[in-house]
Length: 156
Image 1 (cartoon, rainbow, N blue to C red):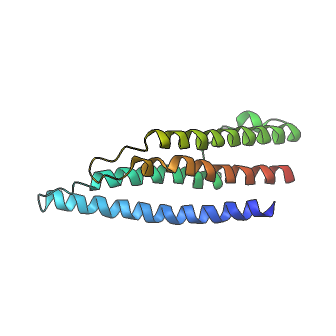
Image 2: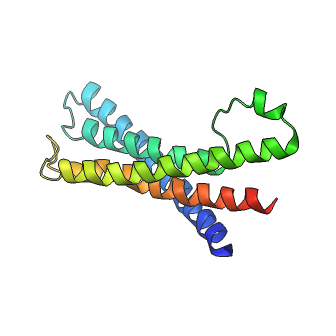
Image 3: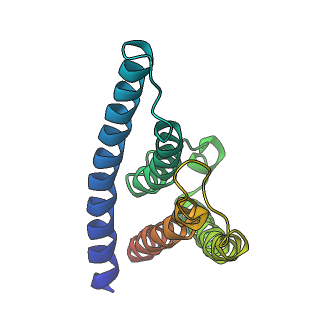
């Protein structure tokens, strides 16, 4: 099962690198758009569309990176007051339920991509499936991280 931990780490490294590139690109595109609009009095017709797509990808991929780092907000007031065996059981149940949800995210994300397969974006004509491909992709990444955390919790 060592490969799950390795895969989780590698995926997170790729995601965090992508987040940097996407965030930097979005900042540059937005800055250029502001300059063109207010200084040159000419708007870039594609910048808002690309910025919106980048924001969607940053949101979903950023959530996977936060999940890997256990940086999501959690309410564990009740769980912390449980005896250690019950606390571990609660952790395992939460991880198992999360894994099920992530599989649902993948399944319905793929279905949704099929539903919008023929649609294209207004400005650039990019297939809408590209914008929404991040849903099942993030579900897969979430699943790998959840499986890794579940295996670590079982080992304890």
